[in-house]
Length: 152
Image (cartoon, rainbow, N blue to C red; front, side):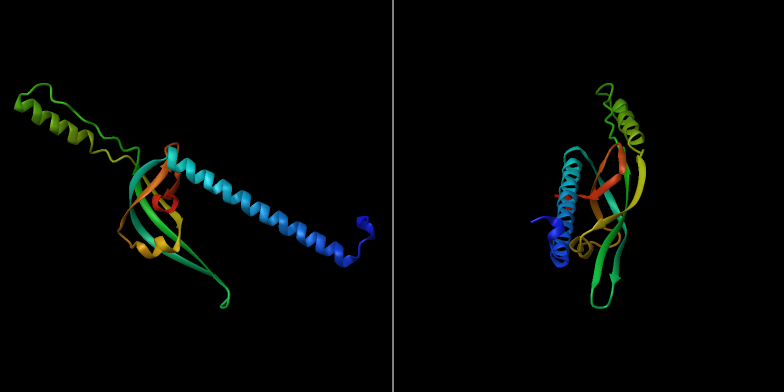
């Protein structure tokens, strides 16, 4: 039977199921792309200690059909490198000078980053303002960051 010979109801059913299949396909592809991005962050990303600046709960929708989204503002430093300075000799003066030089070299905090991360309800309930958390970010693109516990 040709498409033109089908009833309007049958044509409508075919169109609806085709669109539904396409929509499911888009969701599946998006899910795999997200998992692939998370895997890349875990394998190649840098870890940093961050402070929770604020937590947000966003509620949208109607009274009967609400959607909740959770966000966390974090602040952290990137490109932090520890420097170890070895004393020139076993002399106590050289050892003290090395300690002082190492302290000055490590006083650089790196580049400051502050951003809002989308998080799960579990993370939202677990943390509070002022908590320390681990974030993972791409060194070349520090704004591409996630809460480490969200992708492990």
